[in-house]
Length: 364
Image (cartoon, rainbow, N blue to C red; front, side):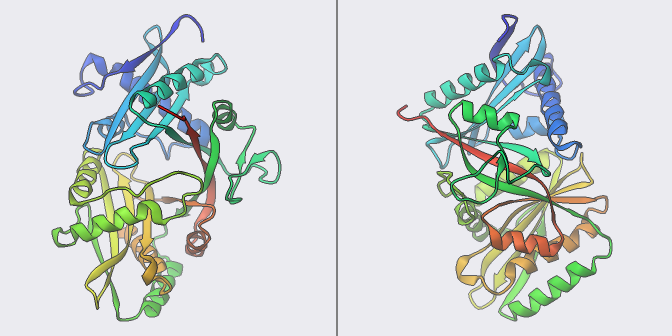
């Protein structure tokens, strides 16, 4: 690392309207630069205001940011998220370096700050995620997780950095994209067939932005189950602790980010219980881009095409609720063969891959 570069822990200002916020805005610009470099488009870029709202303190996660300064310019960034309600041995981290300052030791210096902070906070596991566009040769010069599902290019900058710093590839997720169509006969047919298979014991309920109070705790339990019910590869992930307050905090944070969510859940009529859900999210700053988040059906209720019904019905609603939407992105573990098959049937196509990296720190 050059002598003119310094790494400092950055204190989040009260707003972006004060001079102290300039480094935060510059760091957000750096994040967007890297997103464009990886994906070749702006679909995963966010405004500084959105990132500011997601960085605010809450009862469930503590975020610490380190910035690398060259003079007054920001040339690197590291973020450490410390979960506070569950996964109390874990820290989630990311390290970004400006393309013009790579291979100077700056990334290693930023990661050293990450690891030191994780140890100070009593964490013995660090996890991180990196992306790569589709199109690489998955049969040559790739890393494969222990599950044997999926691959990530070994020669990529992210893979070389992660492995050089002691991380192992724990899982690979496939990023897929679905074009939004105004008149989608495929989705209509899939939703109808799935509803027929499900039968009269089930019905769908939905809400925009705010879960109905009478369903709140049931929905929170679904969110807890979702955190470990999907394949997790080699990630040492404990079930997240969700209650109604945590659901509300997430809804309020998304609203502050200019976001909106469309949730559809399936009700088991005989028991009166919610037994599955799916989530779509969109932010006003990116009206053409929608993200498919969680989809879960409780294990004892599977085999009735409930997952297909939930997803197809929710996707069909996008045109009416968010008419500017053009693309829907989703991520699934490569070993999650069932959900990948559902998404392919829905029309999703591979766009890229996300590597989940994990490092055990030993005694802290």
